[in-house]
Amino acid sequence: MKISLGSDHAGFEYKQALAEMLRTQGHDIIDCGTHSADSTDYPLWCIPAAERVASGEAEKGIVVGGSGNGEAIAANKVKGIRCAIAWSDETAKLASQHNNANVLSIGERMVSLETAKRLVDLWLSTPFEGGRHLKRIEELAKYEAGLPMQ
Image (cartoon, rainbow, N blue to C red; front, side):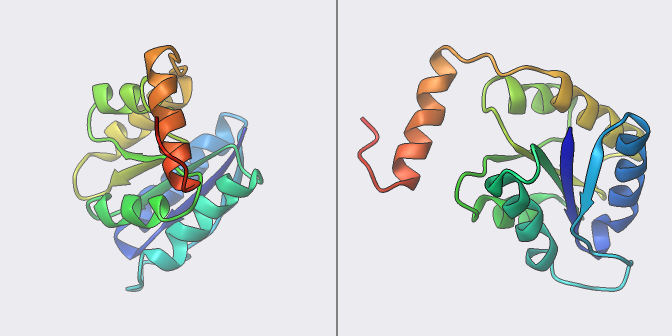
């Protein structure tokens, strides 16, 4: 799978570690930056990571920051992106299972690196359930396209 990654300085360490883990698992990585721990702004790196997913260049994306909140907000500005924040096994699974999230956001200051790696694995391995959840995803797409949701 091709996965895009983006982070600000507060997520740089985890972005690097997640990229290494994912490459080891056989995934292709598009590293959208940042490329150091120097202070920088998350929109500059997380929006391009989300854009790679929206364009189809990447199948999934991961954004990382201090809390994961700003990074998720930035990613969700991109049309076609459903970015979810994960901080527990359940939130990572539900991001895929119920929300069909195509981008995952993680806060480096919120979870351990071991947990972050597990969350990514759970998110990637949990299939979208469809069913009643599909209708909700379709409503989001309609809203985004300026159409009535119902």
